[in-house]
Image (tube, rainbow, N blue to C red; front, side, top):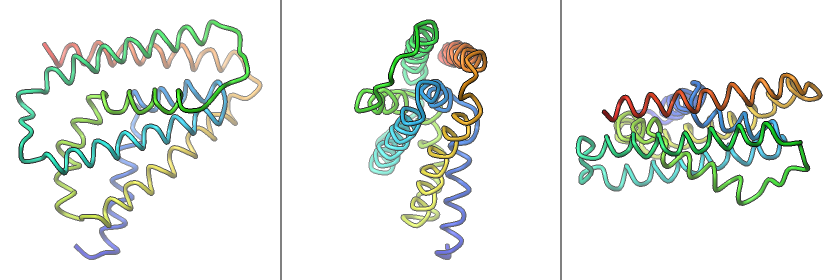
Length: 191
């Protein structure tokens, strides 16, 4: 694959991974309600989880039997989604305080990312296939797109909700509901 094409293809692939609504974007949205900084740190935690999953999948692709573990991936993912849904609801019902965005915020995003069945399955399928197709250049484009998304999405959400407590609460409640819906869907897939 030509280098320029691999880079453009990687960028398109990165946006295909990050833009669709999913648990990670829900967590980024919920954290952005606390502060723009929390949302961006959460996004970089998500990106780190993708890096971990990408490296693991690429390194272990010949020894991983997806059929043997996929049910457990969905079960663990469901438990994590319920936990984060409850956490989002708790934060939405407590008075807003000065946000403390740091290692804990980052770690929560990494945890959600490495246990998110959508991310895991994406890396075990599309990610692995494209790794062979475009190699390192494709991954540079992919992570470039992810970096752009994890900054612009929280920033846009921050601008849209700033000074609007009703909108902030609505985003938090919808975020929690989406987490619970993903948990239910993962349980369905695990059955």
